[in-house]
Length: 108
Image (cartoon, rainbow, N blue to C red):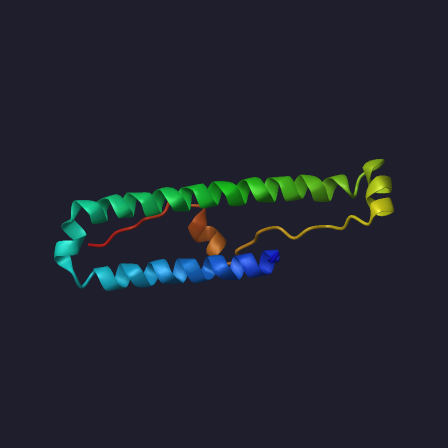
């Protein structure tokens, strides 16, 4: 099943919301916050967020290059012949400002 960009953005927003709920739930358990395994989980979540941000930037750069290519001569002649159309960027809207900064995961 192929997802559209809008469906992927919706899925990512749901993941972000779930992680925020996890943060709120963990605050009620001080012993868990100090657990070494949990600290490792925090680091891994931060690493995953950084990797996702890098992949979004790569995807948007490639999509922008593709969109520019199908609009410039002479590649637009081939693009029109084969029916290539502009693709949507992976834009998170208001969430974009938050994602430009490294994730700040704190359970204290």
